[in-house]
Image 1 (tube, helix red, strand yellow):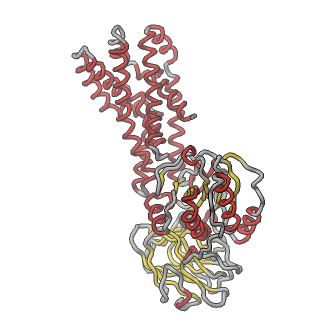
Image 2 (cartoon, helix red, strand yellow):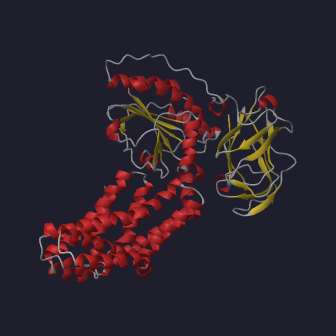
Image 3 (cartoon, rainbow, N blue to C red):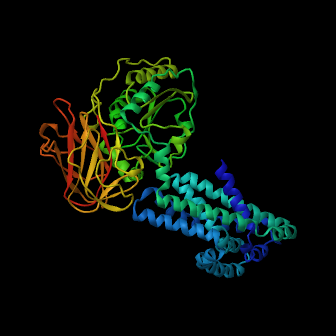
Length: 562
């Protein structure tokens, strides 16, 4: 609601800018005529022009979510230009000069038509002439709306802004001289507010360009799923929280929806809802999927709605195409909301991947669980809430029995190495003898011996905040690990397939190969995702893993174990 109030005030305050002076004489040409047949069409034409101009900015704003790399940079440059236009009026004037010139020509045509059509045309001209005042602010309003991925929401913001602008202009038309005198006394107020907003926009673009937004969220909303932390999460999840119910937060802020149009709280009322916070490269999340899919298949017709809220951990998980491909490959058919801005995540005050919240038919959170496990308790609560919602419902109370395959298989009940990040922000147990040089290309080597849980790089790598990027061919990563399974989140920086080869204690994996390599240890990076590289079949012992890359451009993010 606050954003709509700000949009309305933003539209109304444009009349306090000195750049509105060239517009007012043309508007007051119609002041002596009928407001319904003359003034109202002018306002309508102005609002329609705002719609067209702002839609251009909204497209650019949507790029921040929908495209990656160069397209993302182009979108940030667009918003940076809009922010500078707010700070520097001369910059805004140059940007809007073509629109103003077009508005002047339309105004001349409107003067020759003293009828309804002429009033409409004059309104269009007013919209273009007012562009230096309203264009940058309106563009930012719509660009921000586009980031939320909801066309109806964007349209309502636009109408709210236009209503504010039309209201102030209507007052000027109706009150005449008194409003003009008041405007003259207050010129400059809106200009100051525009500059403050412009500085905030530019600062925001700097934060996004530097990656500080992702780093902040990764550090303060992420949970390291090390073995110690996982045990703590499981202990917390065992608490009986059914007596501490609270209304579920509003389901707003998703940037995109998969397998469903956008869902609202009103649409879900009367249903039992399981909200699953996950991200597609998270091994703990993947291991819960067999149960979620089985519950969806068994209970959907009985009134259960499973809603996956995809909250990204790494930057590449914000890419819509990546998430859509993962959802398709994983066989997920229930609705998935992309929470790229962490709006839903923060409204739930969530801190974990995965996290499950069960909401009853009245909209109250009745059960929650963090991490893997507690599947029987969760399913029994699903049955309880479904029966509460429909007393006549006949349920098969036998619990689902599922077995995951590949990366979705349950973890082994043995000691395993902790989740390990390759980026310097959360880097631990790095054993290369060379000191890490953050954000710079440096040559690293593998020591003769690795201790348990230690890892090392070999070759020319650029270690960034969340990943390590191989800059020249012939590099490798080694890890002395414990566990049955070894997974590594990998990506191809340039988008082309990249080969790799895995060895265990210096030998080919054979029967111990993971789902993403063959018995000889060969594999190919095709997508940005988690790759299962090792599945030990015999005795689980401490093993030295090595992955070699004959080609440059490989990007490694994190190791996880099972």
